[in-house]
Length: 178
Image (cartoon, rainbow, N blue to C red; front, top):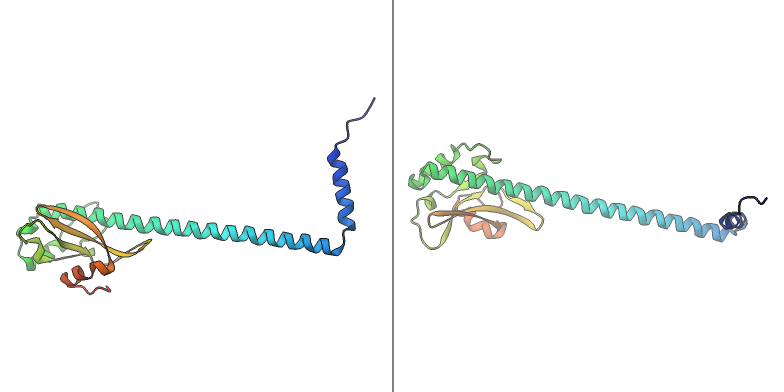
């Protein structure tokens, strides 16, 4: 009876093992260099993946912060409409706004600067700003602020870059670097 059939790979492995022992120093150095290159290539891919992961997390956090700000601004707008802020004297609008307490808002009322004179402004076809974030939010493409606009009897929110928000900030009594 014959024994198990010999695996041709076993013979090849033995041959490779014997060649490895007898390989010249140059071949061994080439294999070591190949291993180093392979290690650094893997390390580079790992670092690249880590950088991508950090960018994704940072973008997600900044976007969620910006969305929370918009949602809070809309909640404060509803509360301001309930308090009839449009009928309040312009010099008292900021005081009433700061006193608003809104459940579920992730931002405080003092996160926003209000433009008192614009709340009581007569509705027209054009929109005009009535509130803006005091502090800029960072997005993946730069810094900007959320702005609350009054369009007729309706309120809408918008996003402006720092440079575009500068005139509104001055109107709200803030300097554009704050």
